[in-house]
Length: 120
Image: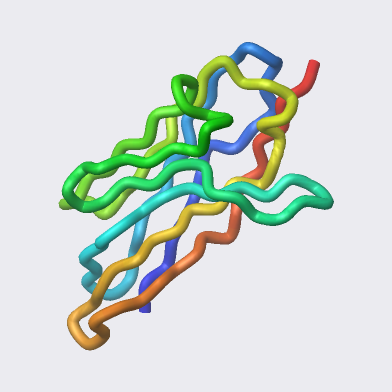
């Protein structure tokens, strides 16, 4: 069984920066894609950024140029560097991973979420 553990959520002022980290643990895991999603109060969960094991990235239009996703294949970790944060970035951020284990050709795993609060 694979678990994702996120860290880095915090209260930050508008214009500030924050770095979220996510690490996969448990069974031997090789990821195909890892990424970050977020859910603001009263809204649906939305994609923020994803990265493939080959390093191809994809960003939501609302964060492009402000957020940077990176991953370490060997460590099965994914980070999200966020800068120029806006109040509308306030949300619970969830780490997501798609990949395989020794016994399962495909699994999808979600983290428990970490709160990012952008306010004065």
